[in-house]
Length: 194
Image (cartoon, rainbow, N blue to C red; front, side, top):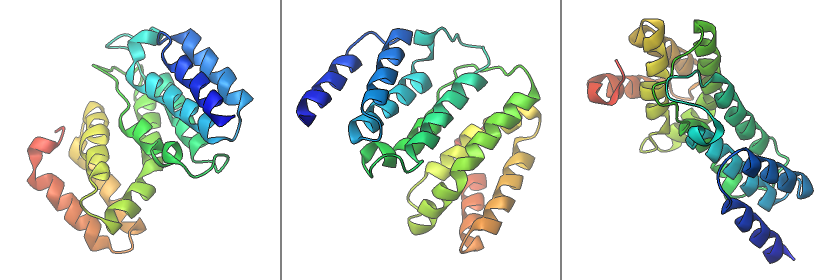
């Protein structure tokens, strides 16, 4: 019965966060492939990888690129169509948007470019949401904080953000929406990493 499966997942999630928990979640996901409870387990795995880096041996100041791509792969899996429509599939972008990398340093500018490319995957969906409801500010946070921080590490946050806005304008149903987003971010510099 489903309640026993859900209870088994709850028990896994009360275990100590660390590599053994991830192994147990992987086994659970495999045993219940394609189900809503597997989607929840996969989401939880992504959440822990994205927010509890210290539990997996990552330290402040280290390169988070590999961990970022593990979380991005979980996002891709949840959005692949192999899981039923549910809360965990819907919330999948938050795994990448909330990825935590305290005092990150990158081994090379190539790694920064790779992470920026990963964030770019989310932009079309976030733009569509923003065009439907400009109160949804996930795209502002992604471009104005997450991506701007990486562009700043590369030497020019404003030029990097401008290139993102130019690409977004070409994707938008109404390019003036992106122009407004750009103006909104630049008029509120305290919200930006410049």
